[in-house]
Image (cartoon, rainbow, N blue to C red; front, side, top):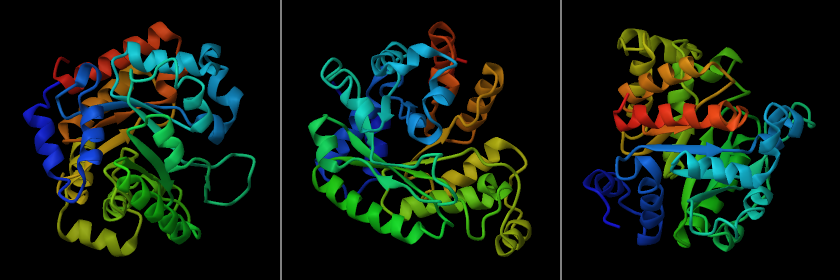
Length: 307
């Protein structure tokens, strides 16, 4: 397999990384229907922890089976599959070598109350044992627990990279100075993406931002400097700018369940803004398989330039 010029250019942005990390990033970017384009579409399935099994899978009971999720990512020609330890273990042997895997190493659950924090539920050793390309970690900028999460992430990142694994950071602001509306405000999402980049993330995951401004200090700058934010594509471009001027891969979540047409239109705006790709979970696996494959196919077509 020859790495394409587009992928080589992206790899050149990661100047301090060892060949192992770059090789694993290349595995992701050279997989599936988007191979070689420099764009990514990843299937994440950690909602069982976050929302419970029925809320996650009852809409499409086939998805209770971890093998179904591996198959969905493979049949759709996606770049990779991200999930917690048990889910990956349940199909690791059957699908060994067929699909780049990302081990989600921390998780929360909706049975706890009022704590914006996550427990570490997997390890770098687990990721190596399962043949993963990297680890995934959620941090909550703004949370009272964020400083501890940042320290956990720093230690896990150091260990992962020393073994040639990439680090993917879910950067989801909440708590502290951040209002509920502000969790997806453009100033807050850009701040969260920048924090993940500063933490050494190889791939950053954030939510598509709205045009709201949440922090008063930031609002003045956005208005005085007339930072464009009227359209989603402009807001995506600003998030990429905040991610070291586009020198980091940034993928955007699919968010709450929505209609296929609305999601595809959102993806078009993400691509127009220079986003690196999408990480689509519930909007895919909660649909019947034929519908999910059709939707994922349309999303991939957008990033390929076929739609």
